[in-house]
Image 1: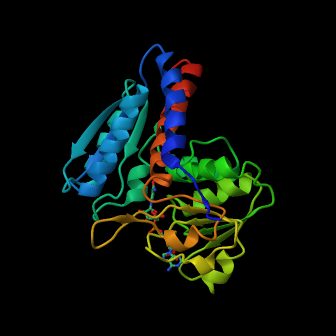
Image 2: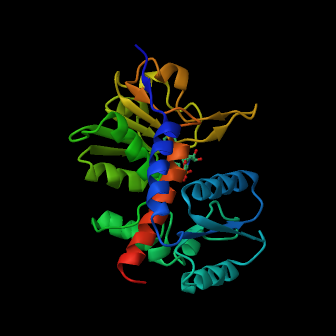
Length: 283
Ligand code: NDP
C-alpha cells in the first residue's frame, strides 16, 4: 500500500478559513510590513504568495522593495522606523539578503514583539529556554503536518536532516516539546541512511535534491520534505526521492503542495497572534 499524501494545501486552506473568520471579528485589520531587499526572482514570488495569502484572510500588508546595494546600516535604520511605527503590527524581512549583509544582525533589528517570522535571537532564545515565544513558521508548519497524521507523537523517534537556524534547530525544539526523541543529522553525520532508517518521523531540510532515497526510510514512517529545489528543467523538487519514498512511508508531504503553503499559513497565524497579544496589552 502506498503512503498517505499529506495535503499541505488543503490543511492550509482550512486554517486560513478559520483565520479569516477570526480577523473579520477584529475592529481593524492586522498590519504586516514586508521588506524585500533586491530583485531575486524567487524571493519576489515568495513575497507575492505571502501578501496574497495575507489579503485572503484580511491582513493588510505593505511591501517595501529596497535597493540591493543599500547598506546594512540603512536597512537596520529602516527596520527601527517600522519598530517605532504604531501602525505596523508585524515585520517580516524576506531572506536571503544580499551577500554584503549579515542576516542575523538584520533580523535582530526587528522588535521581538513584531517578529512575524519568529527568527530574532530573542524569540529563538525564548523557544530554546522553554518560554512562550513567537515561533518560526517552517518548523511550525512541519509540526502541524506531522500532527495531522500522527496526533500522538509521544516517544516517537524523530530524525531531522538539517540544522539551520531557520528550520532544523527550531524544529528539533518543537519536536522535543512534542515528546519525541530527537536526532539532528547534518552534513557531517556518519551513515546518514542508517540514522534516518530509525525514524518514525523523518524531516528532510537540506536543499539537496534526491538526498533521501527509499532505503533511508523506515516502513510506515511519516516523511516531511522541506526542501525546495529547482531541477535543470525548472521543475520544483524536494530533498526526498518522492516516487521511491511513497512506496515505503506511511505518510509523506509532496513538493510542491506540502510544507510551502503551510509555512505561509503559519506566518499569517503568527501575525494574528501578535495582533491579539498587542490588543490584550492594550497597545
Ligand atoms: P541551509 O542551507 O541553511 O541548511 C541546510 C542544512 O542541511 C545544513 O544543516 C546542512 O548541514 C544540511 N546538509 C546539507 N547537505 C547535507 C547532506 N549531504 N547530508 C546531510 N545534511 C546535509 O538550508 P535551510 O535550512 O534554510 O533550508 C533547507 C531547505 O528547505 C532548502 O531547500 C530551502 O529552500 C527549503 N526551505 C523550504 C521552506 C518551505 O516553506 N517549504 C522554508 C525554508 C526553507 P551542515 O550544517 O553540516 O552544513
